[in-house]
Image (cartoon, rainbow, N blue to C red; front, side, top):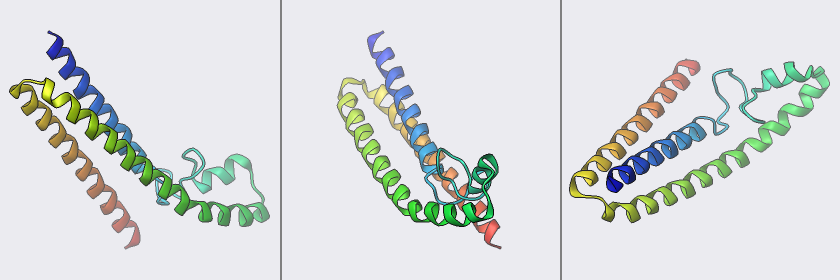
Length: 135
């Protein structure tokens, strides 16, 4: 029973951690999102930011370069955080793996493979959207 709960906890943790990492990756400030525009400041696009704050044309001209300048820094921070999260998740799985039975290890491998496949599919979908927008 303890092993079953441990497996469930590990699978849930990996799935949630993977989902969080995916969401972070999707919103890493590459400039495009569901709303379009510049993804910065808590997920606000530049368009929505200027509308929500009712920026004047002069303010828009001042704010936009600031957001553009911050974009590479935000991207670097996000990528570093994702690498650290992956290292922690890999280390955690490596510590838990020996506790599992051979059958549970196979299930864990399948869960991790499915998670990786989902991540790759989302990347392909995002790339297709970017390609469609540039055409």
